[in-house]
Length: 130
Image (cartoon, rainbow, N blue to C red; front, side, top):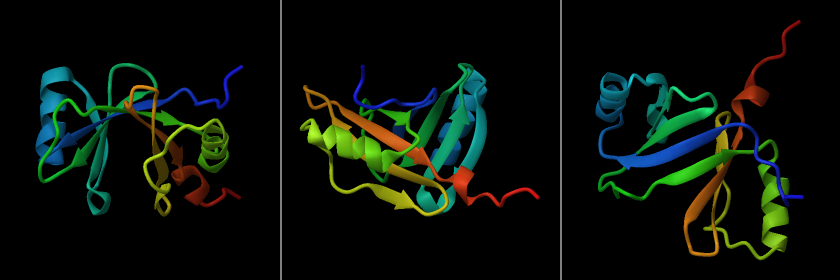
């Protein structure tokens, strides 16, 4: 049995210099569709042709090509992080929070490859229907 249970979504996070230009390239070249651009967070997301798999574009002044980070969706990042830390998994700093959007935490596998957990906060930020 696994220590934590990621959900059925994964985002492949890439660093890019211009998110909007890169999003157009992915749309024109691969047929992916922009889901949203979060300008305040420097982040754009596109739906790939694979269910549950998105491409995330993180804007950087000096992008690092080849520095691709798989981002696994998780229902409760705090609980998952606690379990992984108890198993001596190394994390890169504190959990980042973009209020009303997402919580993320970067961690490393045995070889130092970066992986990330992400808890979607948009669902809990939505008003309840009457």
